[in-house]
Image 1: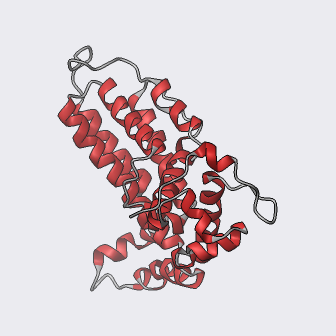
Image 2: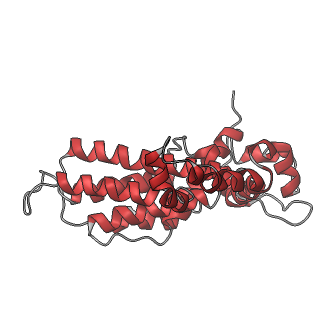
Image 3: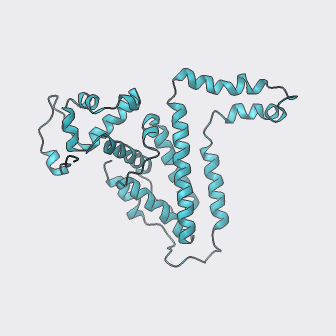
Length: 258
């Protein structure tokens, strides 16, 4: 059976570690993020994390039932970082664009953690608040519930998929990343028009664009699709509101420590 997780109140009463550090869920997650950045997912173990925190590895199980639960907390922390300070404006397109770009940027800033967590569903506070925000923006824009869920699904999966793809590139050894980027100039740019006419004519643009993330372009395409599906002005589905609810979106994200 999994070990019970000690309540937050009891955790705070524990004595500091030998180095004087007072453990907390936030500190463990922050330390795990640093270890992922420095050593990759293979370097994140309970033993190594305990050493980094100057604590017995078994102490970690007072905060998390196992390393998988810690992984979920790391993913939720990235979402929290993404939307910390974000407030809805009431303009659906600007709000969705901001949410998408923020989440993508937060994951790409921690590429090793992104690879580990982008495909996971945490069910934790920040993820729930972000999902509530996206659903609220879409419903407030006037979309029927089935369309709202369909677009929410595409929006979230597209954002996380591009985050994982871009993070995977950034997590490559620097020499491999440079070699991949140089391929557009060294190989594609030299293909003759006689054998590859379309690549040859596009080569200068490919060399510029293909080393950048396509997420902003893909996001705008999705937003264009949403705009084309919106009902006529003044027609809103039953139960939809005209404005988003800051108290249940950004406030939850900023209040939760992870």
